[in-house]
Image 1 (cartoon, rainbow, N blue to C red):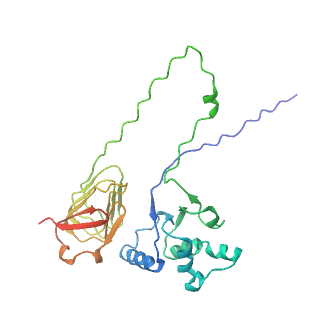
Image 2 (image 1 turned 90 degrees about the vertical axis):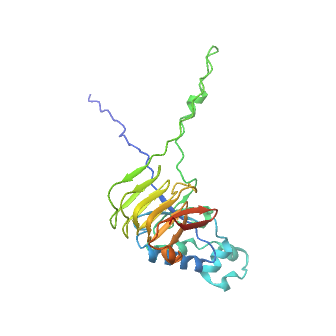
Image 3 (image 1 turned 120 degrees about the vertical axis):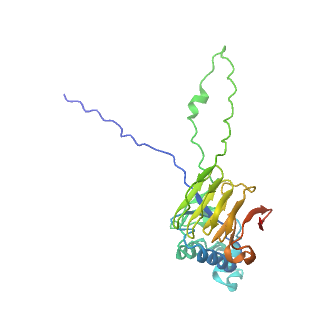
Length: 268
């Protein structure tokens, strides 16, 4: 008799993390889209080939529905009709963003009932949780004379390190350094981009985009010898060139975060 051995095929699973930008719409949506359009017009490649998360925590049901459907949609309806009308039009919001070239990969802070099958998935936490060990280990009986477990030392925090770029950044180049400061010995051309977890120092002209404190560091700063940026940002607050004081252009400046305000001052 011939015996056949069947083996279960292996399925390798690997974890991988990707950085995503988070868009948090605010009401009124018309004004918010106007600001977004101005930002995209100033920095056309800001969202290009980027994963974007939609955070709807700042939108109430009625306000989102009212912006999408007009003032008449705010009139109360009866029973089930009212419940359906009160559901936020997230599909319309995602479609509006898609028309602007912004791809939404997930939605945060939404009720599961708000999302249909054609919408991006509901996300939470911002970081994937580590997989737990099987509970069987926790159920194993301990021997009576077992020694108490040794205390586990907490992992040492990562020390921030700096990245120094000896060459200038050309248009289309992008540098992402999440663990520390970035120093550019030359200039940053229009269309180039730097994202740093710490501060950004440019010893030439800053004509592209500089985003410091990208990992949530409000103490990060941006310093450059010639200030001509397309976009600057620290810890999630952004400012485009057309919203900065023209007197500061082409000067040596520093940018820092003061509460919820980006401050820009000349170094001369």
